[in-house]
Amino acid sequence: MVRELKKILYDHPRYRADSENVQTKYSFEARPQRGIIVNNASADLVKLSADNYIGNLSSFVGLAPVEALPGTTVEWVRENFNVLEQHCSERSVFPSPPGVYFLSVLDIPDQPNSVPGHFTMDPVLTVVQEPLIAFLSSADPDAQLSHDNVYPGSLRLWLDNRRVLVPDVDYSVDYPSGHISFLKATPSGMSVFADYRYRIGLLGPFDFFRDTPNVTALPGAVIAFGDRAQNCDKVAIVVTDTRTDVAEVFGGKFEVKFELIVFTRDSEDRERMTDYVILKFIELTKDLGYDGLELLDISPGGENEEVYNETTDEYYYESSVSLSMRVDWEIQVPIPAVVSRIELTSKAAEQEHGYLDGSYPLDLLKPGNSSSVAGIPVWVGRGRKRLTYESIR
Image (cartoon, rainbow, N blue to C red):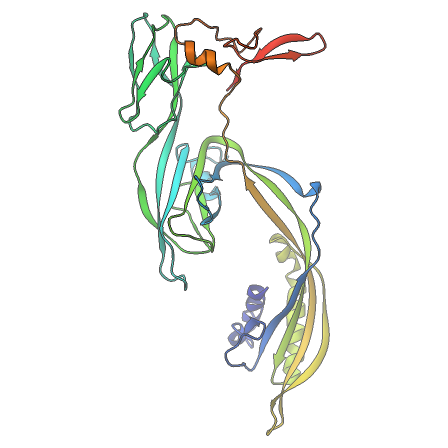
């Protein structure tokens, strides 16, 4: 509201010099000759219900928490449509490779927000379905990933792209070098595919200010920094190669009421300034709607006088303007989890036998029992057919 009033006064040549005299709660160091006070702002009661759920936000980028850190430095992250349009008119290609980008705060801006803070980016890039090896015989004990410096715990090996191999049972891996050793006889004629993440080194440091976006640290993304920056804070920005659900969106509307006090040293000037403010708000109704602000009503109120100098019998002349607006509110709750495959298996049998030697079937859906390595049996349909829901990728 203060920003809009400053713009309204600046557009008038008579009040241009007074555009900075728009304050809240009479916070002037020295009271000026003319100005506007935004006073008594209030809003109606908002009752949350199931109707406030809007849906899921689909995007290439999303936020995720890191360990037990607060993660309040970054308010939100969005796609940068201007950059996406430079790569594809349909905005269907994201310029940065998929992965998890860890943003670490080195130091925060000073309180006046004149000296920037700094942060770094630690990209951990994602590789999916990389062809690793095609077994020609049962004596192929080694394989090599195409990237080294593999992120610990991120490797998944798939036999014929259907069954995940068990680490330390079917294979072992040296994460710094990306070298893989198979611990069992390899099945001839089958292939192994790898999913993993790897580091490429720190990027930055980059500058940032409070309440300011950054569009250069992660090409294709807008990283919005709020006013809750903390030293040593850390947050993860997840980038995918296709748009996925990254947040649940809740929203609604509520009404906000404002009381404006227009004051001048001249009674006629007070009337002109009050009429000008009212007419400009009515004129800007359509433009405010584009920003999600709906002007419901506006009305002039009473007038009064306040003594400026009793000796010379000078006064301040004031008038009030009441207006009501309906505004949108929206919050987004991140969905950081990326489910690549769900498996319901007998862990005891899996750890004992593994899958590399082909002793157990790779079918995704098959009859089983409670101790079968294929999975946990479920009863399906009225015919009570017992099937095992093994895995989904």
